[in-house]
Image (cartoon, helix red, strand yellow):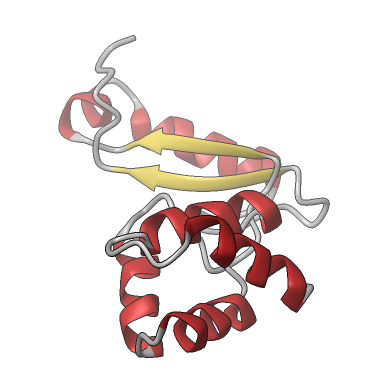
Length: 123
């Protein structure tokens, strides 16, 4: 991770109040996740406490503190999907990829996650 890149991202977003989410989105877009060093630099350069930056990064499911695969596989385990075979699908994906939810394959091609609702029941 290059410190210059984070500085450039921060400069693009300026001093806008509430710009933290946009800053984190840009960093994740660049690296595929939010490296700890980047969070520390964001906190330092924006005058925020690291715990506040970390709090935002962990509150939103769209952000990841670990590298994710090129392809994110989300298996719904909500009530409707559970009844329609969600757990069996999750089990088969785990078996085929050799990873558990929250993990990424060694080649960083796939990350598996389970969710409670995708809003696409029975599709």
